Length: 625
Picture (cartoon, rainbow, N blue to C red):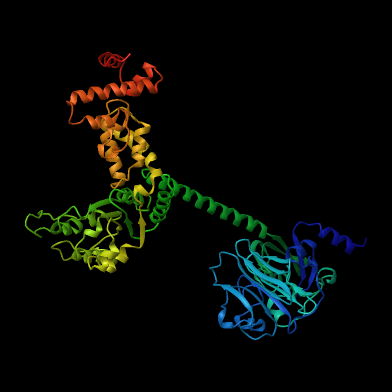
């Protein structure tokens, strides 16, 4: 082995890229690692012969940033493959399939404005009997061109222009872009404009590097300039500088070469940091995703807590809850629709608690419960001396109190036309004046309104302003009546009873199957509010641990056979003293309990919620053995 071969073998074993030039800028050393970093080695893939693009060639093109690292392509240049230049701007992400020399407007393409590309962009078509695809994916930094099932991928670091030429007759792949195109002077613009390209794969010639000027392989950049300046004796070199050479992120050091005290060249030591940068960027992206996921989880926890008092398992109510949660994330006005007692107020408060305004006040006002002549001052406040009986200091209205939070306007359909106009002004201008005042007061308030009326009908009748209706109806949520979701009755009962017992200072109670059946069969014109009121009455009426059907209001169990022989009780009314009716009812209840308990007196006592002494006393009193 001669000294030259020995030196090359040694230098090729070095982990860093080594490039040495003489004082004239000619390359004297270019090791294997440097060739790997800059893609100088013959490219992988099926390969193609050398040649150039000619008229009629099918062109597949993908560029993540037009003009950035494609030889300086301009929108005007793309006319050569049939794209109208006014359709594209420099910096756009572009994917296209066209024919070299075709009329502008004949190519198929898609574009995404600079900086706005966040998802894959793709076009597909069939030409010359072949399925062709051009795709750019900014998330994984990949440009992909497909001919049939054969893929030609180019993974870029920051930007790249990917190109493929296809013979329309032979279907031969004439050219495809690959790493090292800058060094080979094969950027997309040169190829499209007809410059000759070299062969790849088995058709590739050994790279001719040694003896060529450094700028033939690497266009001037701060690092290459530092290498040339050091070789010429203009600078002393540099250490650990980061930047790009041929568009590839690298870390470099430049050292002078001196012979007998005279500057004769310089050496560039280069390390590819693109993989490190990708890892760091992936790490940063992962951290951002984790932070986003954590934020979503926290928001989910906030929403679950906010909506925990809205009970139901039906598909209808779950859909309404889902919509309300989405509404909570925005700052838009919400209009809650539904019959009386469906829980519009509970939904309004839940939306507030799940919103970004949750730390602010939640102010409730029922527009129907306050006389019209007082409602304006309640909503907007008044200045001192505004009217007879006004406080000397004036008074803040509900809108001022809700500043930074949410105001809930219940029964909004009851507002007079005059107050509707003032409310519209608040929504539009975020300001109002107090009664008797002149100065505008600015507020930051989210409005949630509710009504059980048909506002569209009220608009047609001239009773409700159309412009206000559309301002309120940004997000409308219709809460279904309880009769349309009977499967929610059982969970509502399970939710209400323990809370009512605690509120009333009663022991926990259960509800009998017969009583539950009566609740399930009822139509509930008063909805959830009526159900809660019925259960509150039953809890207070029931002496024992179990709510029986006789503890429910009579209008509910009409037509049902209840525990304690309710039908007999109804028949007896008007024909016997009340004491006699109660005695017969007690006797029937004890016998029924013993029957259910299989004769076990202990179980019967528990069913009736009675103590041992009271139970045996009643058995003796009613001659029950």
